[in-house]
Amino acid sequence: MSILILGGDNIDPIRKVLMSLGVDDIIHWTERGEKRKRKKSRAFPPHISMVVMLTNFLNHNSMKYYKAQAKAKGLPVVYGTRNVECIKSAFVQTVNNLDKDSPICKQCENYIKCYQKDQ
Image (cartoon, rainbow, N blue to C red; front, side, top):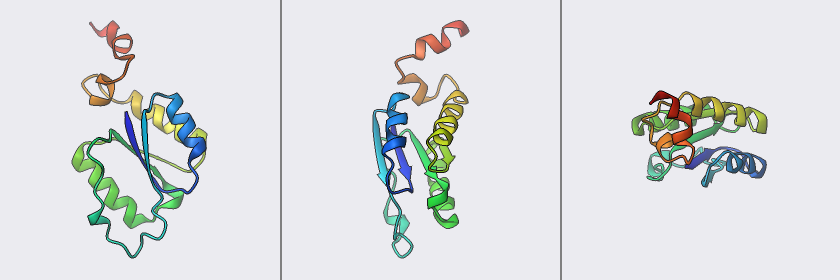
């Protein structure tokens, strides 16, 4: 699973927690100093599976734009502060709310274990 994290400067603690939860690739956009740049020229990478927004580092307009972009691509969005436990909790809750036909679930190594009881 590949995740795009928006906001924050040092995300090493968050990176470690997400990697322990099965995330393979993490792309990080700090969004610092992006007020004057055009967000529209910066599209999401095509291979990401989920977006994580660090809400205390993004302004409302950025969050609104990226939320709409994620919705248009059908990507789940995790919202949280830079607190590691907040991100971990929100990530787990978002993953638990996915249905079994989700591409994120299908690429997981534990897919069979999760949905074995449904068959």
